[in-house]
Length: 194
Image (cartoon, rainbow, N blue to C red):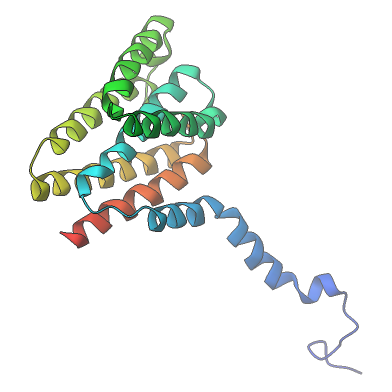
């Protein structure tokens, strides 16, 4: 009789089961890998430039809460990123364009009632206000102080992402996971460069 560990007659699926479990575990963590890749793709000489990430992320969460469609978060982030990049290229500044947009979206959410719902929904407008104010303050501070404040804002938003990931509310889990990894890596990276 052949020992079960040495028997090559077992089906191929059974022989590769542990490998497929590891493979699927890696595939399921695609937002983490994407967050790591994005963090390493962005080269930031001035930590204050990280403000665009915080501003876009906070506005994406606010917008997605008002839409009440968690799966729209990826398209929202993509659209807001395009607007931020175009405004920067045109020399306008992302906050000049996205700031008023945040105000309009918050008013719409309050009037329609989405931002008056309990829990994380009610916290989106105040979070946008706090993150937006910190980003603007850091952008106008000196290099070292502004970079340190921006690193703290990125780390704080990374923690905010983790709350959303665990609650499985407002944005899709994949968005919260990706954003948490990106924010935390950028925030820690800026602190290391200081």
